[in-house]
Length: 440
Ligand SMILES: *Cc1c(COP(=O)(O)O)cnc(C)c1O
Image (tube, helix red, strand yellow):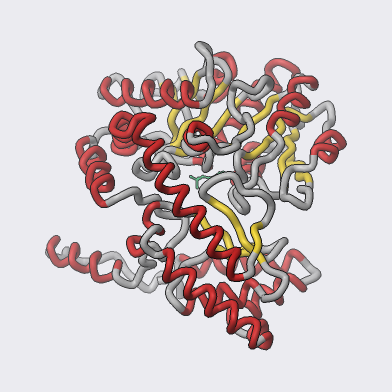
């Protein structure tokens, strides 16, 4: 039976409950020791304490109704404005904050869908994105009744331009490019995609969820970052997550549009409710004000100089991870531009490597097509560098000496999944996994 835990009849002392939380937490991944990549974006203990203070200052307030909390309205408007400035938005750029990248993506898809219906009468909208685009686009397509048209990537994991051209139909409302995409940290050809979109009178969304608060600073630090923001003609919307490389508290992202007219299609209003006039910018109703306040606080506390300093330090760590990993015998997948990348090898089974690393207490993302290990580096991973490289070297040598390990552990499962001819079986497996997630 799934629900073995019944509703507690009597309460437990709050102190005891809190210590239980600490106890339970001890079994989780050790992000603070730099053993988790992605998921937690920890800048420093000092900054995390600052975030907690900012968040809890607005712990109980609600971002739903700016009338009641004008200070929250001001923070959101200012965060959006600062983000638009950072990402090349002109006077007309507009946007809103959301709970995260997925919601920002959903809002971009919804706005373009409603725009295309309103201005062109398109009733069966389609959008084009690469197989490497974040699943949030598939999700948004599914939720909002837009047909997902997925195109392949080239050998460097960049969206194939010719495939995009071939996929265009009169129903295409939107092309999506990533800056960079998550699996390999590689940039799609944004300039080409945007001019294609412009020539066809359709939308162009740049998914800068992971890159929006990183790439502008890397460029200022002298790294070669191709144009990807509103300075590129044809780009109509951009998603950028504050709670990733903006190093703010979780539950914060921005969705930006080239102008207010396009943003209008994001909003939802209802005038007939007995509960009063209702107007909501995005998917959520009640919105935690803490994440909005913490975002505003972070942008103001760091400023451009603070981010430049942070990224100048962080990129040294990234470069050290990359060169150390390559020195062992692995190679990068494609040409990653920033703090996230994937590495692979023709000499060893990457899932065996991941198994061996997991046994050493590293929480790593495994990837397929090509088999690789993904790393999203944050300052928390800085102190773990030499241990990581030592363990990786050990794993590499073991995997080379013992090819039979491919038949064991998770490697065996991944090997099996890769060979399953019937994709519905994989779907079954994933649904089962979701059900299990809620077993007590
Ligand atoms: C993380 C991410 C998303 C989704 O963001 P969430 O905050 O996890 O909802 C979308 N696109 C890219 C490229 C991402 O890295």
